[in-house]
Amino acid sequence: MELGFIGLGKMGMNMVTRLRRDQHRVVVFDRSQDLIKQAESQGCIASSSLADLVGKLNAPRTVWIMVPSGAPTEETVHAVAALLHPGDTIIDGGNTRFHDDVRRAAELKARQIHYVDAGTSGGVWGLKVGYCLMVGGEEAPVTRLAPIFTTLAPENGWAHVGGHGAGHYVKMVHNGIEYSMMQGYAEGFELMSKSEYNFDLGRIADLWMHGSVVRSWLLELAVSALKDDPKLEKLKGFVQDSGEGRWMIADAIEKDVPVPTLTTALFTRFRSRQEQSFAEKMLAALRNAFGGHAVRR
Image 1 (cartoon, rainbow, N blue to C red):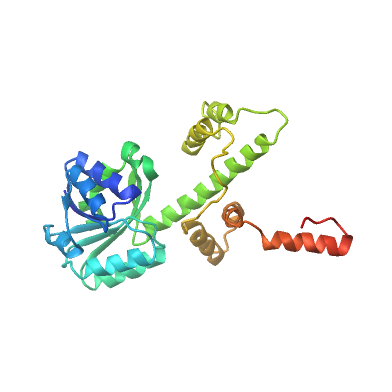
Image 2: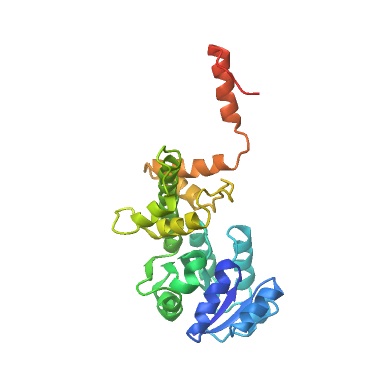
């Protein structure tokens, strides 16, 4: 098949490389000329602008957008839509809030342009093992694009999960579960790191990968991390979030669904970014004030 692809970052470059392995015709655009040249070396066709990219595609055109969430994605969707024609399709493969998918799909439908949201999981390992794709949108464009999804995903690794926004909704929940799983591993390994037994944490992580009920790909990644840096001394405990956890909590509040594990995991990430916590200073001040408990200046 033929595809326009915008955004050649960590995931985008690997995705177009994987697409070229199955001989899909891929026209690429990125702000970085170096990345465009790298994609060309994989057999992609370079473009100098969004208009040039669209001009090099045959109808019905399909453009996959893989840029940072929020304003960059919104601006790119509008810019590309202005260049497309009835019957063409835009795929948003980034991390987008599902409400925005529903709104965009309605706006594009008025111009007879299809919109597909593809929640994409796989990270930097996707080139080798494939990307799990959670796809939302109308049946017709999703069916037409099945060869693209099949190339990007491992066997049985993509599904049409529902209408507009459904793909990113499922990806949002997926990432919320991911937050919670990582937090569980983090707390368990911290407790073992403080144990009097002087555990080899990498060996234990590897042990758990063999028959244990807590084995997972995340745990496999923990094995690698602990092998390279057994006490994680090369890292700072600074953890960002990409938004999906916040969106999932907001949706859970709206639906009166308790998600305490996810909430704790997200708030722990917030705390990780503070050199000094004002809340903890307040706790120290209050204990000192009512009980004369010692404080550190």
